Image (cartoon, rainbow, N blue to C red; front, side):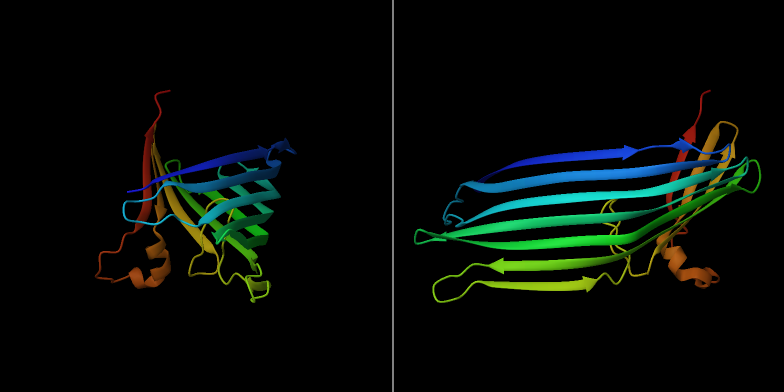
Length: 231
């Protein structure tokens, strides 16, 4: 096996404020910034192999900003927000052959506007709560590739633009899904100091009314957590 190394830097900044408007409503602006760079390197060639003639440098810049609010009463909690997100990632690959270096650059730019996230919680009884959430993004992705002139081959630049068919939220970790928007449902149980929280599984949400009379082993819940307060 060969030896490989990489040098990289990553800076991430988050800022969020909670501004009191009334006894039941709070307003909250939000901001996010991430700067990443990396340079992998082959330090030693694997036995029987040849040296990798390509040097790679990758950089990425991501930021998001938006506004949201929360409404709270003794039995209902509602929260939501809308934001703008942008991610730009660039990879530069430099190949050296016969003493001549040529760099190919690929740049991907993602923009999401609006990115919507809303959710709510309401208590049916003193021990049972229902929860629901919805996430949705309208995004575009641009891919640009720049190749240098090599010998008799001229330099070239290609670009492609596409609207993301399904919700894709780059900042926050939500990947593309087969449905247009993501719905989350859950239940919360509280008995004294003991609490149990569960989200309905994505499989169950997609099956819908087909769950009635179903014979397969479909998971009803996706995540279940429990906690106990010693206060």
